[in-house]
Length: 134
Image (cartoon, rainbow, N blue to C red; front, side, top):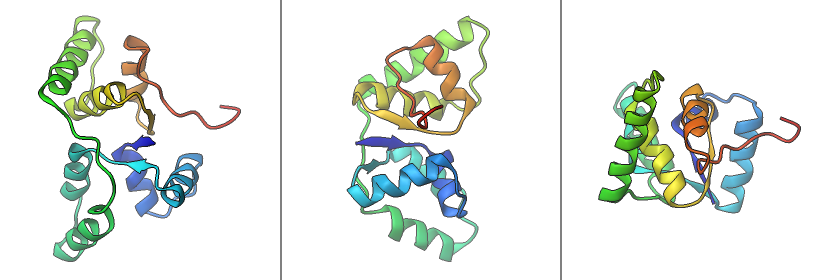
């Protein structure tokens, strides 16, 4: 099981060939690619039109979800605050929620977003996928 961030889904939808999108292909083949409700929200926000929104619902509606609890939201808020206290700017509080979910479910996060590197520096429990040799 691996939680896949919006950044990788977008690359995958655009047909990019990166170590992360190749890993995503493997995860999809194995049934191990997981989403979070907030990731679905971010993907849907990027829909260009109704047809695109329908495609997103069709492609992503059946994938397994890691659902947040109230405790997850508390942890996400704390992550954001801890960053702020140290002068670290996280561009999206959604990233804190995604990080908190990965920590809570003890899963690796497949991502390509510098915010997660910053979050992992403050919270060693956040495990980020690294390509072999990377």
